[in-house]
Image 1 (tube, rainbow, N blue to C red):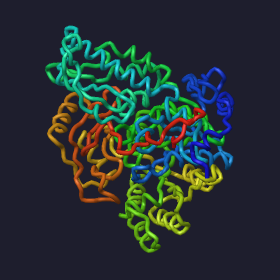
Image 2: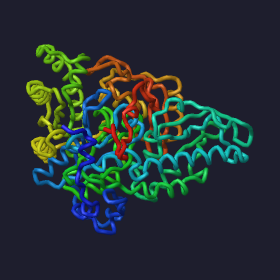
Image 3: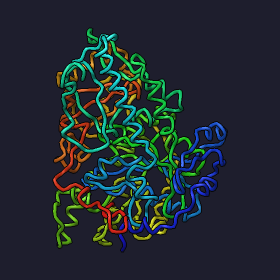
Image 4: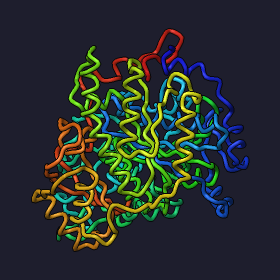
Length: 558
């Protein structure tokens, strides 16, 4: 079989204007970016405001391995599969960050014959949205430091500056830095750091803003620092940054239209990580897709305890969305991993035992979906080497564990035809009765919300708070921020805060070491365990394999 990059490079793409017309966009509602990419004007929402919404399906996953288990591939598969069975689907995905592309996971376009294209463009600079987010973020940082230098009219306490700079790359050396060195002309020295752009509050704001004016309002509401009293916030509006930041982001606010290998429409917009941010594409993209399609597939990052929980409790609140079903992606590889198998075995008995033990993780995720009152279809994403016996065993155990349905996904090798049965099961689930509800009420206290997530989503017995977190909870409660939802930051590789704890651990206590207030985005971020907001590259990052050949073609991107 050809590599994913070769398949993408050989794809015969449809001009983006034709994709837009088939989707139902008017010519003036689509701004082409070259031949195969385009920006959708937000005016389409006003034109279609009276059109009923389609069905909304969240594609989530079990706790993944470091390489991922193919949620994007499955989301693309389902879109192609729905097309094969005569439906009108629209896919909604996040934009890839350069951090994972050059780090461990590689690209984020799906794989094999279940991809979105143009693959190289969307994995690299695309339409410049993420660069615009970084520029807006860093403009606020520059204005803040300039304000301190030029008389400090806002009485900013340099020891209480919470705003960091952002970079779209895994670079652990920038987690903690000193700035302003070299004399007074360079500003006042202080310690600060960088977040990866995908984890920045500006990215979060882009993903939840409802329109241009809401974007500006949220940017102005950012808390960048505190005054010397330690209580009074200094905001983006105080620093006169919100207007210019909005100008930098006005085009980035428009969702990007691309296509699957089989010609279905895909909206790719915003790119927050799910372990250190809220892990979902934009509310605007979801809203537009719901007006244009009969079935909308929206992918949430990492396991259901990460992106899906945040989709339900944060995105659906902010966007007034109501999901109809969930697709839970799993692989035999990940199930064996959570069953304690680090290396493949030739023994059928050993493999069966690892699957039986590892299914505890899948069962936990099924129980979490049930907490939200939604039907769940388990998609077994087939990988090379998976035997028929293993795949069927997982499928049957998922049904026994309470799945609405469980189907094999073979679209990586077969395209939409390999996901048609899965698509039929998802249609049935989306049409089934459901009783969607949030994990916690808005008026709960900060600790009550964290406790609900820790116990219901992660399986913890209790939560312990470090002194910094206790102080922040008191401060945020006094400031009236206690009614905001929680955006938990923790490792995606375990249901706990410890990435070495596999399966479905119980009896553990979740440590919250600190908290950050995203007052522009509209939530609080509890930092659990050792989670960092700037990842680092491993010893052999994916960047080592990416190169250019003699003909100028990209090689090694996957």
